[in-house]
Image (cartoon, rainbow, N blue to C red):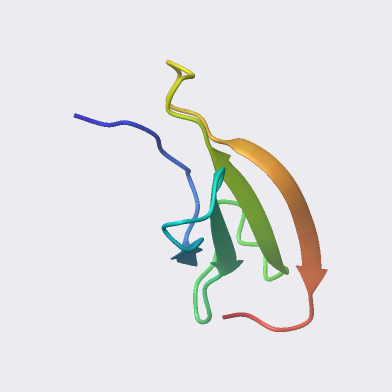
Length: 69
């Protein structure tokens, strides 16, 4: 059973367990291309809201980066 999903090829990290709301950070994976063959890199933050019935996670911010993770 899926609770949420993000369609990214990325490294990820969760916020600390005691932090609320819960956030997920994704960083563009090194040595990977996305579906559009883009080579740009970014760090994106998502908020986990289990009260929302959709599979999507709300994007809270995206930052361009000169490095992949």
